[in-house]
Image (cartoon, rainbow, N blue to C red; front, side):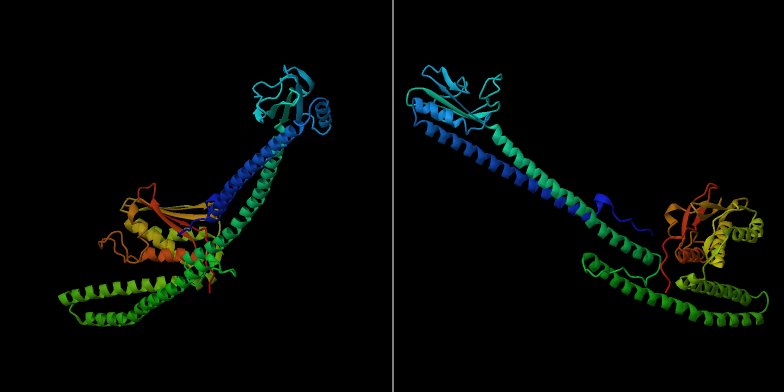
Length: 465
């Protein structure tokens, strides 16, 4: 059983939460910036209009030569290109000032109005942008036009806008760095939890998920899982102990029972019905004893301490030995048994005797279920630096819906007694494969039957106690 890889990038929960928080922060900052921009722009606009109204009231107190002198003196303090004025006679002919023509569309009502343009396009001395302007009649009957360019207000607004944008940018950049660092630490802890979980899945129920000193949500979850594992381990050990004790305790009385039956059989008349019944009872007793031996064998293989005896060995001599051992049995069943293996197979780490036992079970099953005239093939190859061993046959194969169940104890694809067996052979193979940390796959072969693939690439193994 393989576990899912930890989420990466935007799929992790921490990334999604941080992204949501960042989006909310940006939206809120945008709203705040918009409100500030509107308020500052509205304030500056009102301030400019109020300043122009004050100038208008100031100049309305003068007339004649005094007005002319006051207007000329005001140019000293006015900002060129922003503030401007124009003085006209009663017939609206220009007298002096930068404004040489009353702007079109400006009402002569003494109120401040916003104009799209204060001057003609070819007049570079006047404000080129929109402006606020007012036209009022002086005490001596002349007309005075005052104008102020709105571009200066827009410049101030742009400065404020740029400052806010820079502020948001300088906030987002540390936010992205914080997002990377904050998502990296939980992923490291998740990978540590995954490594421990894979060790538990591999069969080491003594292993526990790591806990940190922070006692956060991940630690709470790991503590809950550890408590569950302790309970599961205790229950599994109790059930396993009961089964092992039953199998071990019944082996002795069954042996005595068989011996008694054999002695009785020796006194029975040859060819009598009693002798035939005793033969059948002895055969059933042998079947029970074989099943108990198989259960005890599986229990022995599930002991993780056997890993301490693992060595590095060449798989090619083992495969040749396996082929030579089963060749007479295949020939007796009129089968063709072949071995295909290169000379440079990668070395395998494990128990050589157990590997021979596992491959023997696989090969004997293929020979047993393949009809006469068929083929059985043992094929080995180098699979990315590890040895892969395949046993293929031209038999009936294994249905796809039954491939996951063939490794269960006492399960038989054929419920009849035509092929014999107790349904423990592949369970023993599965126990050996799990002990080594290898993988075993069941599929269909190009010969038309089953293909059993043993991949000798060791996955993560739990440490032995």
